[in-house]
Length: 361
Image (cartoon, rainbow, N blue to C red; front, side, top):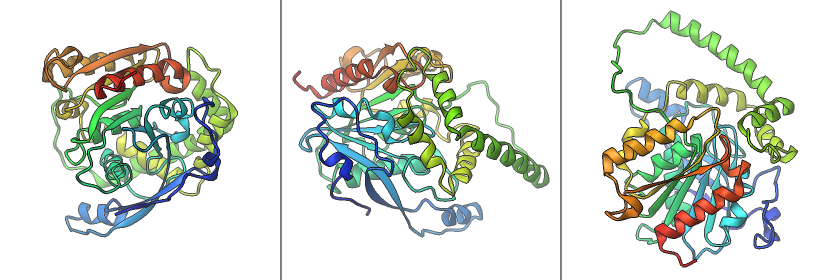
């Protein structure tokens, strides 16, 4: 069982979210949860060798919480290369009505960056354990309602965790902000063959060099700002020095380049679980709050999610026939609608969660 710090970082102790719309930036993170898990390089190597090793590792995970602890919980999960601070314009507003948490995924932000292989299962288990240990305080019989929202890779993680049987009884809503994820291709044929270890090693070496060069390039402040402006195509006013710093600072850690390489190579061929399969398992209502001008994850991805959800669960407008329903709100923004158009996203999230939980306006 993990442990969490009792109080938020000093930067939040005197922060008044009822009067401020922007979260204060902390260059060293916020609070810490010690996550004890079987995910580590030793177990991964043992598994690859066909052996069994159940050794545990403990990782320091950065997170923050804000709002009334007696209210339902809303957990926010950031995207690739970002951190909990990316929800700076959402947390204060959402915390006026809900008990809000935001977490840095392992390998990102101010969370630990162990040298290991990263896949979707790592972050799913991190979110599941965080919900169980921190939000539900280890109480298996807790009736606290939880909504999970995520952007990009965090959106994929949010729906993967929300579909997990360990917490699905408590998870009442899932919000996807331009979620990443690979769809199942019905026409794809799996090719089976023996890998050539020599070719694989050469390919990996070249790939590692290219990614290492790109990592050094992309962690430069000017390059970070340039990339952000590309994915904030409608209004780049919120691309400021603090946002750039919140991305650059964690990237300067010693193991960050190796983690970057492992995340890219492990997930470059798509996460292990297809979006199709996750949507089929999701029992809670889903909100697609989608930045329709996203240059990376096009609106067609949201279209396909809606189509698949209807195929699996039927046309269930507003939950007339049970909890498995989906709603879409189009946001005039790019890949990070929560930061580019926070007012619209906050309204969409609050309206949806209020509707799902039956909260009086």
